[in-house]
Length: 425
Ligand SMILES: Nc1nc2c(ncn2[C@@H]2O[C@H](COP(=O)(O)OP(=O)(O)OP(=O)(O)O)[C@@H](O)[C@H]2O)c(=O)[nH]1
Ligand SMILES: *[C@@H]1O[C@H](CO)[C@@H](O)[C@H](O)[C@H]1NC(C)=O
Ligand SMILES: *[C@@H]1O[C@H](CO)[C@@H](O)[C@H](O)[C@H]1NC(C)=O
Image 1: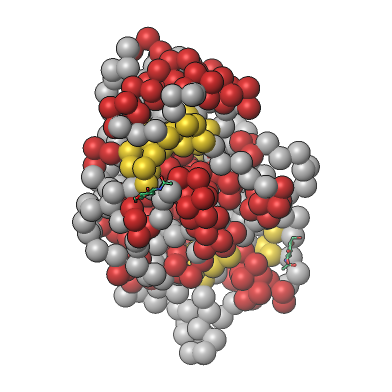
Image 2 (image 1 turned 180 degrees about the horizontal axis):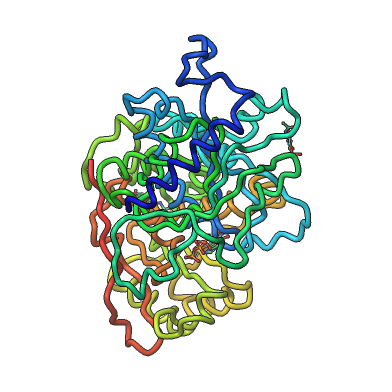
């Protein structure tokens, strides 16, 4: 540990002298009050990671930014967290070869995110600082990587150290060709995200990027601050409206009838478990790579239909709403196995919705509809299902209507349920 700290100190001293001439020095008190320059914290996630894991990494860094903002130290409390624009994710299967740079406000309510932590969009960063330079040279880049001997040594305390880069580690700068850096290092890392504040504290850099940020863990997964960050992740209002219209039209479901009304501001939401939900079963049926990879835990279509039928009977419901990444053929197969005894519905976006809101927006609409169901059943270890469970915790559903999953085909409909990560206020 000592060696690490000294090493980082030396590195950052070096950086201080070489890099930050363009900026006023906070330490030497050169910044005028009105010009008291913000510092910018960037992060990025390993490119194959999906939408819903990225949402989880956001929480880790939003909590980090929240604590920095509250720090009494002047060179820590002036950090803004720059949100990584959404790339063309692998799962979205878009054919476009160019990168899209979708801002977060496309999917989430930016002002709600900002009422939890000081976060800004990439284009706002460009507005604040970039336009003057044309090309952005990030002062310090740290690519996080796992310690190679972590599992061998079996010691799991927090530690970090600048080391030789593991093979194939590089940063893409979000695929922008006007962002670069002369100062890229690999940081072997184990432990909590807040450990990174040591780097920020010892550095005078104005712009710092942590790539492969998913390597850093939640400070305290599931505590009050975690849930505040999560509650502030309200969706883009247009997506909420589309989901509400669908619920109204096809599912006889509305927030008034279902007791799922949230306050306009997440801070005003009250704890309670009085949500009833619409008169339908919400199902998240993850297929594709999940179905290929784990037959023990993910049922085939026929067995999924059997489990859904049993649930509908038990719950005395007639309608199953299915959110799925299954092919149309698989979905039709499922539907035919349940009809005409039951109604099976799936949200089918119009061409306009597809164009405007994209795969991520459609996934969120599916998640909102599942979140409002009387009872939810998801897929084993899918982060897509986890996000729905969290949403239902926020809406105030009884725990037993939320933490359920489909079992593998051979398990006769019986298997351990998912962990119950219940909300804390
Ligand atoms: N619209 C919609 N898309 C889905 C559904 N299930 C999976 N997907 C798509 O497949 C992706 C699933 O991967 P994600 O959940 O994002 O990513 P991940 O972090 O790998 O999550 P899991 O693989 O589910 O653990 C989603 O982002 C969607 O694009 C669904 O029910 N509805
Ligand atoms: C960098 O490139 C992006 C994408 O082309 C553009 O939107 C942004 O304004 C550019 N930023 C600067 C500072 O030139
Ligand atoms: C919709 O739900 C209400 C109760 O919330 C019920 O009285 C009504 O009959 C339902 N309508 C239909 C068409 O099922």
